[in-house]
Length: 318
Length: 78
Image (cartoon, rainbow over the protein chains, first blue to last red):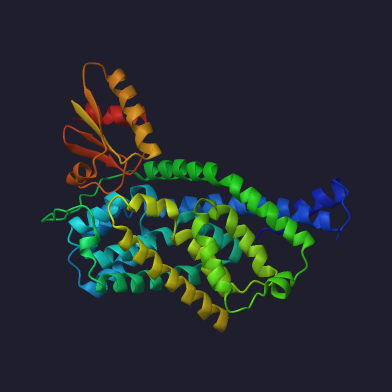
């Protein structure tokens, strides 16, 4: 699909700039130019399509749909809607309270709150463009399972009193669809995509830049040989490192791709990506206004454990 | 008219407030623009994604930025 781009980049680096083929610097530069442009094209296209699709699933609609469902069905639906609806961690609080208002159980609410950031549009776009649709699908599937199971566990712990704001239940949750013209959706999705792109492109360039350096200068089995790609504690390190890295997910994924090609196991890579995306300190700070530290701690603990299990499972079977 | 901007203090909420003030200036006459940051008050409107725009107690839009023209259109219709 991108052969033309690869040829173009090779022509530019080796013919026009005159770098020697197979030289480390030439290879790194070629990789950088090719990868950056390829990722930019894919990012914009995929984010745009995902945003457009999600404009049909506002979270208010999801809430009306989940409310009053049987418990297990609720967990499954909430996790799936987490993938389908647009989500911004800045509105995590109204969302959280809005779910409780509709008498949706705490555990089901958490299923949604775990699933939504995991399938962030940028992350899905990057996974598709860097790792292909199989890994992207695997990631989304595993994310759903973690969201369902972690939500079930949190729900079983009876932590309702750890919510710091008294929520008044609302009797009738109904959703009034606002008619939006298709052209408007196209325009709004485009504005949103441009907005996201402006925020992340620098991280992508830096991430690909470091990746290009590793690609050109670090030998292929470096990680496996020196950092121990298959040591038992690799997923633990991946999760611990991933939590504080939230805002840079866009820069980290290109790096992870290069690291897997240099010997990092895929399970470890998945753990790392999920920890970067699902557990963010900024989100914890926001949630602290309505949830007790204990509940936030349990939330992070359960999700970390789930992500860790995924890492071990995939290191074993892939 | 009473125009309320619901938002818990995100960057977009502040810009929506600015845009709303511009829209009111363009519309003419005196209309109150109020920023609502209290989460309980926001919940009472049934809004789950911020920023949201409320005119005379009716939620007109939620979860997105609006342009001056879009807000003007809402004002003309209410």
